[in-house]
Image (cartoon, rainbow, N blue to C red):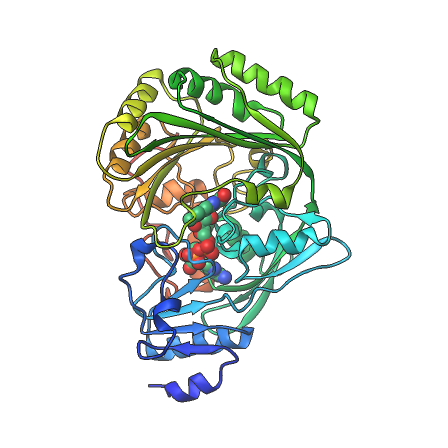
Amino acid sequence: MPDLVEFRDSLDGELFSPDSSGYEAIRRPVNAAHWAVRPRLVVLCRSVSDVVAATTYATATGDRIAIRGGGHCFAGRSSTDGIVLDLSGLDDVSVAGDGVATIGAGARLGKVYAALHADGRTLPAGCGSTVGIAGLTLGGGIGLLGRKHGLTCDRLVGAQVVLPDGRVVECDDDHEPDLFWGLRGAGGGQFGVVTSLRFDTVPEPMTIRLEANWSDIALDDLVAAWQAWAPDAPDELTVNLALVSEVGSTPVQANLMGASTLDEGSTRELLREFIDRAGVDATIDVRSGVPFHHLKTTFADPWDAPERALRIRSEFFSHSMAHSTLAALLTQLGEPRTTGRRQITFTAMGGAYNRVAEDATAFAHRSERFLLEHIAEADDLWVDASWAIAHADGSGRVYPNFPDPALDDWAMAYHASNYRRLAAVKNAYDPNRFFDFPQAIQTTPCQQTRRTIR
Ligand SMILES: Cc1cc2nc3c(=O)[nH]c(=O)nc-3n(C[C@H](O)[C@H](O)[C@H](O)COP(=O)(O)OP(=O)(O)OC[C@H]3O[C@@H](n4cnc5c(N)ncnc54)[C@H](O)[C@@H]3O)c2cc1C
């Protein structure tokens, strides 16, 4: 057994065990649904050599290891009863003259957007200021500029990775290309510890902020119109739709949020087309001149709150859902109850997301029209009921950043036809499955799918 004191003394960062002060705060991921998991140790890494030392130590002790960036994983994969590698001490952001940003793997989105803004740059990345750039990118990265610029992982041009054997490698299209391929859409906790990411950033745009909150509106018409319109809108316009049922507040509320980088006249014209198509009498708040990094902070996300125990199930749709499916979803969402908040969210795909070949990166979902999420408190069985209704019409594909422990065909759902190559990458870089968790990529592509992917 390697010496714990020696290990601790070798670190630039800090080591926490259950008897350390600060252990209770640092051991917890964001999602309270996973707070019962108590790690034996938490290593707060402040250098790449800390990551190497922790990896070597865990190899020697046989401890399970979990990598933590922003700590938001819905399936609790950044928690373990073994050793948590907390990367929050590696959060530097720098931008070179060519616009390539190097970002420490522990940086959260709020810091990333602010730091890039200082150089007039940004990334197509998600909402949620405390979400980690590493977790987000390694599973894809969907956001309000994505229909224009693609997934966050589509802007990744290189990464530094600590492998299970302690080697530190730089990967990009020319160096360790299979690893680099696997990181773009299937890299979360699978092959190695990413310590920094290099992105080809884009100029930060001025945006038009779009928002509407409606409670007295024909929801089936609204959603039907959105499905037919939003995924085909110009790339510069992203409009997402959430249907929310709050306890004690009826009826179901529709929240629209979006962003446009078109001029205001064209934006208003397109929104009018949507409203006319829906046949509803409704207005949308349109606010021009909002810098992108600021736009992110203006949308409140009630789910992005510490101490909430959350559960999500989701599925991509490659076509509009049947009217009967939609009607059943709305009925289910509107059922009276005594506790909690329930939400289904429609996120528009299409655009640049779909102009990348399915096998060009590990992110396989390149022909989808929208993503549907069902989110509620962790103990609310409505999530399963709502998901089951939608699943009848869905594509069978699931966003890897919304991991779903209840899936029985997860390999195909997350990775589709890329799974075989991912298994080969796993075999090459982590043959002993040092990085392991339920639904981790296997070293052989033996997972069977029980449902055909449409
Ligand atoms: C409030 C909220 C808002 C969200 N908004 C969006 C959104 O707008 N768009 C979107 O696409 N997604 C969104 N998500 C989903 C989000 O992308 C995922 O939850 C993501 O995995 C979170 O990354 P993290 O670093 O915060 O979490 P973590 O739990 O730290 O990590 C997630 C996974 O990545 C692995 N990982 C983390 N860092 C590394 C690393 N350095 N090397 C290797 N593996 C690593 C972890 O082991 C784990 O398996 C949101 C989630 C929440 C809770």
